[in-house]
Length: 465
Image (cartoon, rainbow, N blue to C red; front, side):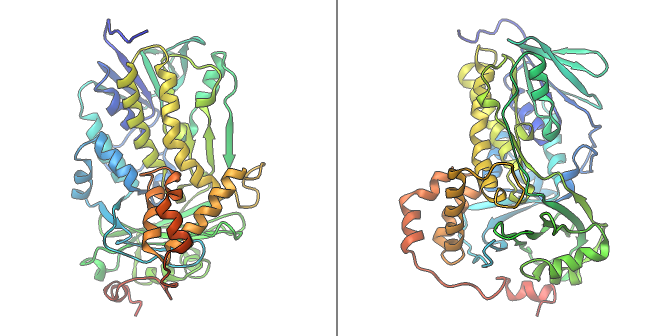
């Protein structure tokens, strides 16, 4: 049955974070009215909010997410960089130690980029862009208590105040705390399959004033990755953000967690990681905040696309579908790619045509699955991460990624192929392309680097020489 518009179409988005705002931007050009319902009071500018504690930690928007974000909100990259965000080249502006212990080489002809800034700035710029659009109304400080409708069709939401809001399409972008699975069960649907892989990672983050001598440089992101084959796994990253500041995030799995104590933070960076470079970088940086910690870092996926029955007029996006260990930096990119999938599905099948909601859910599963396979393959290796061991496919993919990482640290060609996948620009099948198979098996190797590939100017600016 075709989609035949006979009246004003309305859409409603649950959740006003990045995924919700991007979904609303898509809906605004396809519905007459779009309402965003958000439980928190959203700040006017780049300020923290209670319902997003993970915003205090480092976030990286890989090139797959940058491209999707720019397609959704043309010009947003320029808005971000004008307000101090960095658009960095990978691997030109990234100094990274692989889980295996080798340092990746840097090269200038990178085809991948990252946006680096505070999560507060990223959210504020996206929020301002979306809310300035016609047809979009924000109701913040308002909590959704459930769905209205029946087993066959969702017709809107019920607010905690008892008020009912009607909509032709409801998108749940309520994040990790989404109640969509319970609401669907209340409407008569079977429980949704769910999988949790929890490596037990704790994050501790602190903001520093960057050393003054770095002001004339575009200082690189410095990353020491944890090794999933070792327990506990410990890692850390220094991300230059707006305002000549460094956002430093340290991580550790069970038994190796970083502390929120200020004195212990730098000691952990200097002594607990597989290289002391982050601790040494902080020697000339001035702390601006005390450390803050977060423990809610599990990979959690709800397989809505596999549900036996699904109501019309309802779909789930963002962390409400899958939340990832933040260390991989994929959550924001997946949110942007899912919003693109939402728009393409609406355009192909019609906003209110029968079956469109289910098609949205299946379309969203593709970018979700690409990131999920990469994250789970690594984290499932930690003791106690999941009640079931990794599947055979996950073990094979993990082993192959490890091989690609090892080759990438000594061969830029192999690293480019690996980055195509890690940046979420291409599916994991890219790793098995003929050129990658040849490079991994027969490609030349330059040998491991003796230390972090910082330039002389970068080392002198922070006193490493």
